[in-house]
Length: 466
Ligand SMILES: *Cc1c(COP(=O)(O)O)cnc(C)c1O
Image 1 (tube, rainbow, N blue to C red):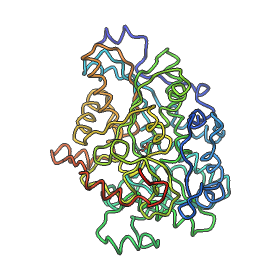
Image 2: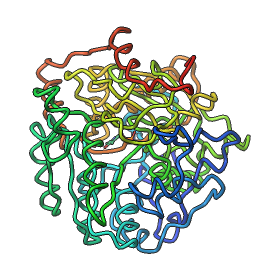
Image 3: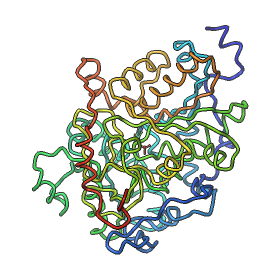
Image 4: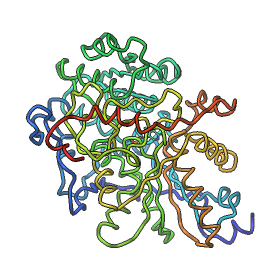
């Protein structure tokens, strides 16, 4: 082991100095020859205008959302200062995992769990809170599922002095009391969703009184609250292009660190819920691929229980269960899809980032789905040798990184694998407990289950034949 380590010039952790950190985000869309379809207004089926989007979102964020020209978008000084509190995040060479697997592959991971919120979500939360403050808003709303996004936004809003209301998916609210307390400590109001504080919440409760809620439903409530409150906007933690833009800091830092040592990845792997960490991790590498400069194998990993890329449809769909948002063309299981309650590993959103969807649709990347018991097995293997306890979401990427490294062992190929380790698993001990007790099961939706979700797709001419 020691010999092996001494022979390598690459340190276990590659850090960047403050000067080396990125000064601009990277907008993948500017490099895409074919752009994804625009948002449609569900009432008129015409592309949404900036004005329409500004009723829900902050105006600077809307500008970023609609920008398909500028490859680089400067990161405001205030945001760069905030980033310095927890960035750069380390890029780690997984020497111990490589040894365990006895693989000729080199494995690297970028760990985003090194801040109190515990995941990459803070990268966009701070940007969105900054723009909200700049616009003179008093308060913002959002939804949170597992709780990472709500926590990240609570930290960012506390920093910039904004009031925050978080609609938290009811099952998580009950199962994750500590998440809730972190948000409250940072000053956020946390409401279990569906709730009776909104019309859409009351409607869903009347129809499904026992429901544990869903992300799509919490989004509907948060949007309604934002639209009905003066000087308030809604902030979203994934899916949208501006979130992918902010998350490009992950990929940019990774590339700067790798370039210092001449490391060129052959495979880049990320877990995919709404697609933001994946889109951000791949950004600079994908832009090079789009420009013909590399042929990297990009892999999106999703849970078999919520398989939007691998079994979904590339259709126009609502981003929420209440069908209140604009329509996005994306891979989706239908906004009415509800993942099985057994599913403990996160990544339970019905849709997928339009950018990631388009890149996947056009063949620039591939997707695989994995079952949760093998995900937790990979998490355990990783934690025991690399030290870090991964978030279950992140462990989806670990699972596939291990699979790819084991393929190299068979073929003797010395591939360079990079994956995104998006967060820490400290808040997911209930799920780890189920795994440790042997009580975790895999549920793969049947075709009939999926058909029920697809039946909720909007019946519009644009979706004919899809
Ligand atoms: C939210 C989250 C994800 C999934 O979200 P994406 O938008 O797909 O990146 C993955 N990992 C962790 C730790 C998360 O908190």
